[in-house]
Image (cartoon, rainbow over all chains, first blue to last red; front, side, top):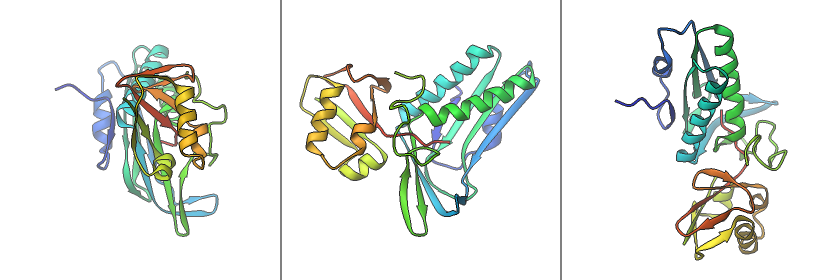
Length: 154
Length: 78
């Protein structure tokens, strides 16, 4: 069966399944980044979140991020799964697994992947607070792209 | 026909996920203006970036018959 390394899913993410995709005999390190739903943001209490995505493009862009990491670290294996739908506090929104022969590259790859997701992958988060709701423009709660476009695209 | 996809606040404000535009060829800047004229109160339309067939595209890019154009508000995954 073909492994789907870059996936948008509706169900809870199984961390060990994402990690298993990048296991390799020549890997000396596997880093796992787990993005979870936070309750308090700047003093505001989140009740739950909703994620939505342009699924085919999002999976394509996740795959592109994998290619970008492999351009720097040719021996890297990358798997990313992002969940959409309704998520509660502490639920896992994203799991990134990167394996490389040496640990430093795996750490660098994981960090690169999560930052890049926030720049180019068409996934949107709607915060539901006790007193209202809002689609979040980006992590700074800005409502437009600071540069008018995704970084390093177009 | 060109298919337009709307997401997040744009989908909510316009009330639809997809629109069909009766054109066989249109630049993205003209398409954006067309939607802005139709939905003048939907501010997010002017700041969204656009994609043709799942790839980000410039304002000068041309969408053709059967293409899927997406309006992509600022992303917030992760």
